[in-house]
Image (cartoon, rainbow, N blue to C red; front, side, top):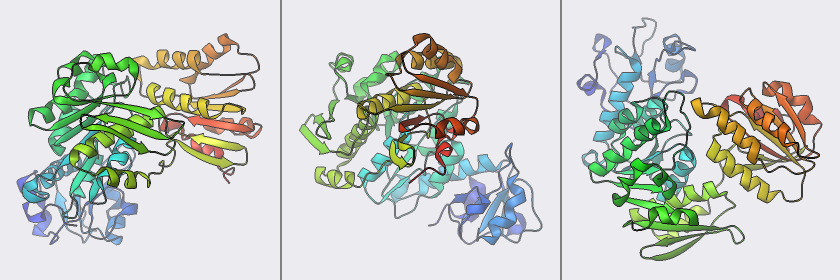
Length: 460
């Protein structure tokens, strides 16, 4: 796979090949010297944790063909491209490579953004579009992650699906300029990653910038009807495909020119979609309502893309829940619903409802890590969790992290008979408590708490 030709890099970013020494061609970017592969370009990034320049020799030993650096390292024999900022250079080169990719640089790219469900929607859409689709690895959705993804675009890819995450003002404009998508999917809006925003309205405007750019350039946009609760989305609704997934949202989308209604039928494990051309039914694995909405959005895009219904059903049979994202696992303590890759009020409510429905006759142990990055919305979100958690006699709740103190205050005030409550500042302090419980475990919290580690040594 060949990235942008090394000899023309100085046309797109301030920099020079030291001593005129450069590789004949360049592979994709790599920012972790421990995982560099032959032909890749090592990004010597300086971060709060480490200086990537100290690991150039490791990248060279593993076969890196060159390095982008901010200071020349004489001990390295591989070519070095000297720049003022490694991150900015990577962004500029990735953007240029996206434009040269494919026929006239315009093979289609889908951007997936939103406050929640981005990774699931991205993974589902990539699966449905077929094997010639390049997709973001994991949730590498910040400016660096987008650069890494774009650098992997090759002639073998017919299309790309790129996940975009923002948590600072101005980041969406940068991501949009780098990716220049023809299609945009907004999964939903909630007060998530809001620490650096003064209000929900400011956060909405930031995310909305992506869809505005796509519509202005003649591209297609998709979002669920719940987004219309935010007034700015209504200005884009006439040119978007709006997904209606709940009866109470039908009034929001009434009169819009392009509406697709969907219904999750859990008893028969089916997803019903009502397109303008007619109704379609898809057999699906067990999914929560939020996951079903992600799938419905992905199916909307894939059908308009031209994918045959039979191909989509065949590919859908290959779907497996990614690690720590709605996974059922067995351990010596019981069975575990592991959904702890991250947490926010919307995804937590969705996962709670799904778990509650699937554990009608079992003792439940709720292992709840705090929801981080909610900013000014944090206290109220955790209090709401305490008010709405569907407890019954015999349940136990373990709250981990200082954010959960607000939730536990409410749970104590509720005083549900026969419910055990426990608090731990960190997951490390909860191991002994956990060992004394048996039943069905619900495990969800922000990635910071890495709740899956609580069950190390217990997995079957």
